Figure (tube, rainbow, N blue to C red):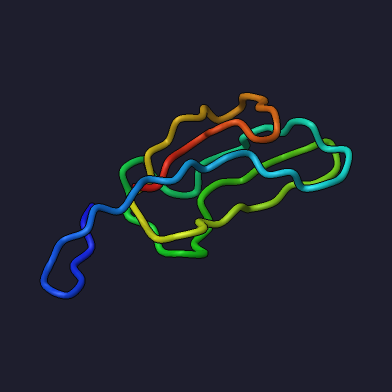
Length: 88
């Protein structure tokens, strides 16, 4: 992905999408479902996936706009900090 600035193209680095820590005692969560398809362009703050713990179910949004590349699989349990996707 390139962003065009003042007449020059700049490469934008991809960022990792990780399982967030939603509570003080949270150590893992289940990827309950993707809300957008792999390879889809997403806007900043657009919901990307649903995360479930033993206490809560929540939607997690995109920190930036970009092209979603899914890594994690629905139904799998991941530790906090695990990379489950990338935004390019």
